[in-house]
Length: 445
Image 1 (cartoon, rainbow, N blue to C red):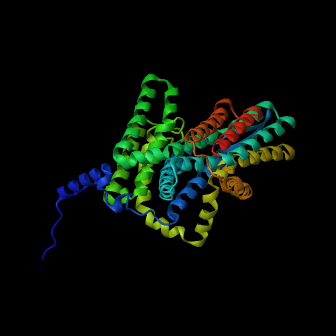
Image 2: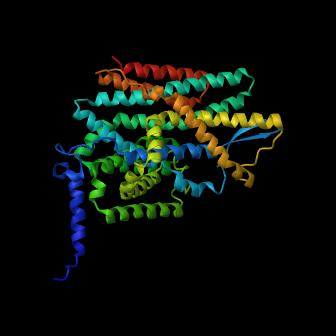
Image 3: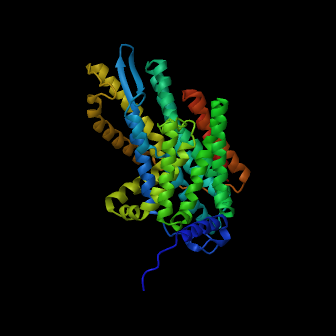
């Protein structure tokens, strides 16, 4: 018999059925998601761990590339080497990995929470564990930053340079605050995903778009702060679909079309000027452009996951992933102090020896970047190896009170917001450490 040619309308019917199943968890087969009978995956997903490690390494190297120092007649000055550089915008299309990081965070958080529930744990137990894991290493990092700034001031370093160092240190801390909020809301959002997967993510997406429309039409930039919640929560929610296997169930063709559609739509927004083609510029405040980036990255991840899983088992790659995974927050919190120390040492060396530092983006500057990035990677690795005890320390029994856990989240959030708003100084770092200690005490019996 001749093979029967598939009828095009059947693909449309199947897609409609897939979307219906996604919106009705009671009808999901096991291959699509976690039903009451669906077993959770055994062990860690090494492919996802590899993606998370990749994201962390990219962030460290990107910040190392952007961190610069010049020495002029007024003395040393910390500079952002990417500012005004023609090469930076196309680079952001490759190195803007924050959407992917939050998708992976949603994937890992969803599975961790479901495993905890299967063991008899509660949402409060999950929340307490996340507060401990995120805030304990922050106590040491922020405390060390305060001590370092005090030493610089006592050593006669100009006040404006000390303020700049504090500002540079505090810039990446937005991630700690946002990730803490996303993880705190994860149990509730997992429940919403179980009830109405498509409805919950579309609701968050609509909120993010509405905030952006209000921000652009009113000209009130402060409204965009709301998208620090809605954009990243939407991307975390997208990770739930990846964890449930829903994306794979749609078929490679549908996933490819979705990813290409997101890229095409993003290019249209760039061309029309709705969003900046600099994807780092879309970070503060986050715009819906990052949602399209996240969709495209998630589609690609869904397609290459089998390959990544195979790669993740290779000894050398597994060794890197095994080092980074349990030290993720330590690496993130300590890489900026490492870069500031490198910049300060470079400035001192230039002033003592009379060596002229290359101008950022010049040929000489690019020739020195491999050495600069290599030193940054080695020193950050050494700091993570030496200082990860706080992140890896086992948490004591958590409190059974949801109210106390909520207080812990608010105290931790207040500590980071204080540093972001007031800047990192000796006084603000001291206050932030006190708030973090309060947060950690709230989750203990």
